[in-house]
Amino acid sequence: MAAQFPVYIFLIFALSAIRVNCDVHDSCREFSTELFNATVFTQNKLNVAVSPYSIWSAMFSVALAANSTTAKEVYKGLRLPEESDKTLIRKYKNLNDQVLEMDADNVSIMSKHYMFLDNDFQMNPLFDAITTFGVGMESKTLCFNDTKTAARHANEFISNSGFKSQLMLKEYFFRETRTFMYSQVTFKEHWKFSFDYFDTTTEPFHDENGNIINEVFMMRQRNRFAFSHIKEMDAFVLELPYGPDGKYCMLIVLPSPGNFIKEVIVKLAKLSLVNILDRMNDDIQNYGLEIIEVRIPRFVIETYMKSSLDDTLMKMGMLEIFNSVSADFSRLTDESIFVSTVHHYTTIHVNESSTAASSETAVLFVDTSNKGLYPSGTTSVVPVRKRPIYYPAFVANRPFIYLVVEKSTKSIMYGGVYGERTVFK
Ligand SMILES: *[C@@H]1O[C@H](CO)[C@@H](O)[C@H](O)[C@H]1NC(C)=O
Ligand SMILES: *[C@@H]1O[C@H](CO)[C@@H](O)[C@H](O)[C@H]1NC(C)=O
Ligand SMILES: *[C@@H]1O[C@H](CO)[C@@H](O)[C@H](O)[C@H]1NC(C)=O
Ligand SMILES: *[C@@H]1O[C@H](CO)[C@@H](O)[C@H](O)[C@H]1NC(C)=O
Ligand SMILES: *[C@@H]1O[C@H](CO)[C@@H](O)[C@H](O)[C@H]1NC(C)=O
Image 1 (cartoon, rainbow, N blue to C red):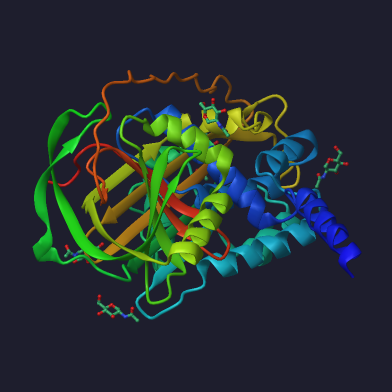
Image 2 (cartoon, rainbow, N blue to C red):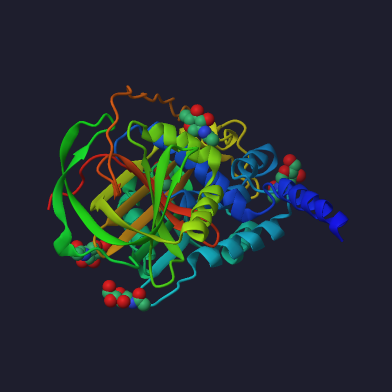
């Protein structure tokens, strides 16, 4: 018996080594981590909010529309395993069911996909069937010529199905566009342990160099939370669970004093969420849940990305979809079309009792006669290192990363960076 032991160990290692990219859960997470990393760099702002899960989910329909090398790039960009569409769609649905499954009455999480078509645009019936049944996409034909009426009708169509577009469906979406895909994900959850409104006080907030930049409304509570110092990132991670069972949680990643957000993000992308959550679990097993004093600011962040998201998707290998010459969307239509731009809007609202977040993603397709719509490159600024500051407990009074995570699939629903006061009352 004893002799078999090393063999088992070897097998376990060998199996976990090949278990790379074999699952759609992993695809979504890998894409999300990389997109999150790239977004923070391209946005180059103090406050950022993005929904990697909803972008991945929207791009999945783009993958189903593409053909030949265009399709290859999108599948690869989404980190999808090489399997038949039938299998991928089944796994995609499975992931969505798991991510969107609500755990209690108070929880509200919804995802919806739409497709709007100009009235003379011919959609391939097979694509229509696949997206209707596979993705749950609803399509609607409108007269795009009259952009004002088209926008009104599209917004009515969405609100009739229980959603509300906060920002996106504007008139210019219909100008020059042949068809567009539009997705929404909304999330509203109560903290498992809410902060007492009366404990909130104003406190100074610092920049990454330790200088006071302004005052924020700091929520506070003392409770048992999962909390780890992750050496590889040189950062502290705190888990704030939502709902009664903590199926969803917010992870707050606070760089160690003297360390910088961008350095932590790069390491976070390398380390992966799976390892971080595993480490936190190990710490709970070894040390139990510690009572800690938590202080984080109340905040509201919204980010609207236009061409910057195109840049990110291109960096992730999806080039042909944006190319008027080589884009191949023959599974969607016989017309020659390409993606002019991908818009994304995310808003997140965090306070004493709950988190409310919503995201919208729109993929605009234009006729190949519209050329010269290529987005430009971006730059990033690396901050200068200064003297570190030290804080006991978990006091988020300097820039931090937040991630809203569905724990069973370890999907990043929403995420971003907080670095500057966003609420004044
Ligand atoms: C839309 O505009 C084009 C060009 O202006 C015109 O040829 C076409 O008939 C119009 N279609 C509708 C439905 O109004
Ligand atoms: C639902 O929310 C209310 C109000 O915040 C809270 O009192 C209640 O405990 C929550 N119920 C569950 C099951 O989380
Ligand atoms: C994260 O973004 C930075 C800056 O664009 C890049 O250098 C790095 O390779 C990215 N890391 C990952 C894992 O994608
Ligand atoms: C996809 O491309 C292949 C080869 O390029 C072609 O044979 C096939 O008809 C295309 N599929 C559709 C649905 O047009
Ligand atoms: C917290 O935000 C939610 C909406 O996200 C709102 O309904 C609730 O009243 C807010 N609570 C407090 C204490 O401000």
